[in-house]
Image 1 (tube, rainbow, N blue to C red):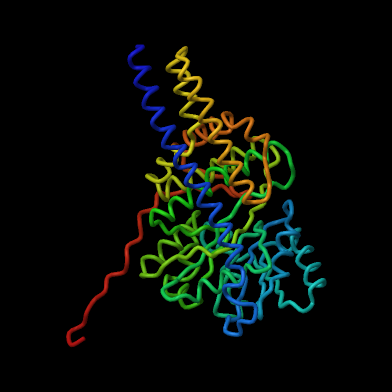
Image 2: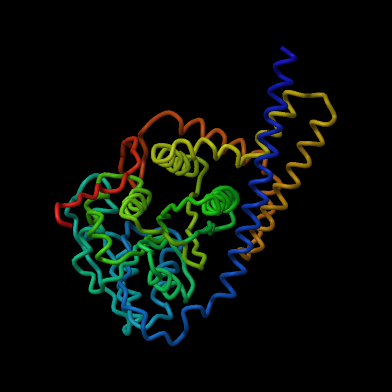
Length: 395
């Protein structure tokens, strides 16, 4: 038994070291991204008359923490010509009042509101977007979730990236913005900032091109080529499916040189766990291998396994402390690049990683998720392959 425990401890130590390496590289990539973001702020020019008009599609569902602030950040964009279309599915949706208030505050903006409960498939967000689509005036479409906060140059960066040759879809990196300083929200934001973001940057470094739901920008032509919004109507992971469809048609997904923020609104541990389970089960069904490998993003979990298996060996304790220090230092590096610190999370990192490990175990089983009052059953998706090209005689 002791021999088995020792071998398990040594294997966990290897996983922990790999996690520290991943954490270090990921934190460095995020810091580099933020530095390049500041340097490239004028890259598309303040006087670029060639930037095409764009339509921003914002599907809404009720009032949520910081919703007004998030929507206001889109109304204050520094962009030559753009339209914002908000959409809800209920006449009594509490978000309508916020949209009308913003329309009154920004009369110079082309702001529209669509209220339509017509169902389309099982994904209500996509159904909302389908109902909004006919109100879009421009060929460049920027789809963004309701809880996303952006800077004034966001549209310039996104549309400027989309105008580059070979780009079919543009997405943005996003960080967690706690709606308050509660520990639950800090913990939930940590999952995004200290696990998800470094993983995204590592994946980009290794050649993956994932579409993130914070921003999905593409032209009307590209959207229609991949089957329109209707092609996403029965998928929970609509962003991942859209990315697969665009890549299958031979086009590249670009990451715009700007950071965005998503509101972290979970007010209780139950809500946080429910949200992370939904997220985990969705990712697991879309990309099971990648989701399994993301266990390496939990070096403190693995080092605590080392501590248990190899106790009372002194080296195991020092190994655990060293991993904790490295993990906290890399989290601090990320937080400094984001302009905010979360010292309570650093002090409780082992608890945060054990919770993340439990979420992964819980995500391995079950297909059901709860999302905005709707129960959805996730189905395993298969990779989308490019359409077969046929050559007619004489071509």
